[in-house]
Length: 247
Ligand SMILES: [Zn+2]
Image (cartoon, rainbow, N blue to C red):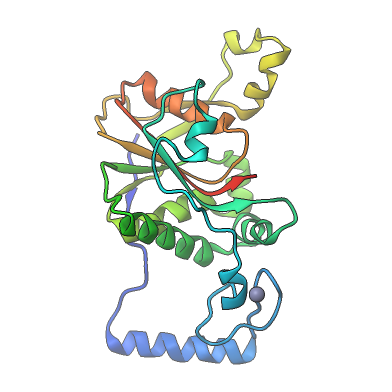
């Protein structure tokens, strides 16, 4: 299957094109005022999707990338992981839930891209320039992706790619069919089955350090499945970056 690499999808162009984009943006702001996805107040011209006040109060991660990150620790004893990083703490009903709702269900692709860029900048500031070789978004169910028109994890990965210069491989992992052994698993393992099974599309590839990218980390069952798929094709190590970690 043909592999799809993507990188640096940000806006580029001549000063004239940029001028026209600014004019169009100002006109749109006038005709269709934008509001903050968290508080709903009208946004100032230089504010993006979240106003400065709400942005400053978001529960940003206090942990850096590494094996001691709480996200990595939650997988301890389940599957090997080189390191992990999350950007925001997610609590149901709180501000981050509105950010996630916007990027997952309301088409806020630009915001997802910018959040990805910010994650990349944070990692670079922490001197995590990387052992990372490739960014691999966690795949969505094809039906869901068709309905929504995009996979938020892919857009996040593209933003991280722009900041860090690491390529994205969008269809590296695919949802596989349930195996007979999975069908025979007991009730305790049923929750695994609901997360599905993943397969690597490119079994001959030798990426040195793939990084799985997702929008929100909850039980970790999906990530665990994806890591299993990577290790089955002999990747020596892998890491995880998630926009949000469930409290
Ligand atoms: Zn706000």
